[in-house]
Image (cartoon, rainbow, N blue to C red; front, side, top):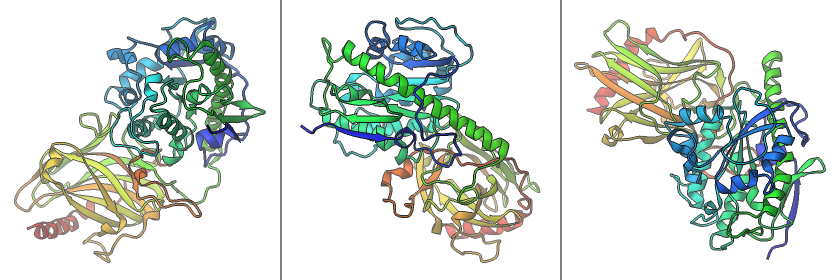
Length: 538
């Protein structure tokens, strides 16, 4: 057996991977309770119920002593009895499904008890600020191999579990006002899948947020699994820092009559978790104060205006209009009968609950565009390409993807035309366009020149044309627009290939802007491009 090893690291580096914020004293870990009562809800089943219960795990009592007003869910709870489903594959239903808004509304407003534990604090009112969620011990029977990369769907395997946790980050990014605490599933006594469980939980602890470049401070992990594998295994605050000591075994060291952790193991977890939760809470609150300071006093110095870290999600349409943009808006040839509209909606989505819907009725020899413009140039050079998912209501739909570069008064248009295959009307298709796939528009100077300015993006659009003798009518849906083919930072190891499909946080922008000038005058020139495109497709 491997001997236990001890690692002391600052909490901020290990668990939150926070960067780019002028935070107050974020390199220390504060294990003291919050200064006011904080509402918290715990999603769990039987292991969590035992952990909360007085005289078993004592977690409910310990949380109350630390100024947390605790509520919980259990079997049968909530809309559609969603409380019945807490396995790892179920988290996508909770956090990234069409029903997520309903479930989250119920979760944030739940103030009841579904387990037995002492609760003497008065409800301070308002929504739950902290969401703790945990799967039970059967979820440590993960199939596959320890080094399996994230898969493409949810299942009880190493790949499937990584897919789930990567996927739900997309929702967490939309709710920086909530603190999400992931509790790893407890270990099994059976060693069959123990190596897989250990490898997955090490990934969850050390690599999950970093692989996704998730920089918000509202997602943290507590390794419940690890501390239950060995009496000398820990995840706690020690001497002012996070102490993580890996166990010498990968199986359950604290069994009861079955694989439910014993009272001793559960109480050990309470002793270590509660001070660590306090530290998580203070880091999250301090980050919120730093953002408020930035809003009041201006941003902290950064390396480049509008710069965007690698692995960024440009828009998944889950959190509404992006600050600092003229958000997705339809522009059209007003000299004709063309009509168009684009907005976020939930009728058809690739992931989450919203996508961009572009409805159009383009008159013959006319055009329409759904565009997003930024107030300041965005640096997308961290990626080598643009990726998104799309779905049309008809086969063979042809549309342009437009990139706008330069400055607002001297905008340059680069585009790529997609002719969707028949299957795009049956479901969603993914596409990745390299920067060199985009070429300067026919109606501008240097027509045909390959795009080479990803550090000067000022806008993005999807455009539709019509044939000379017939209209173009239909609907196009776009979802999960993001960078792909991420470039490594200097002296850093290249990221894993699967990063190109992982969610990240939205672009950091501020302020609002007016409607860009000049689009209305592009009608005739866009018709010329359209006619050339039609000739090329014959």
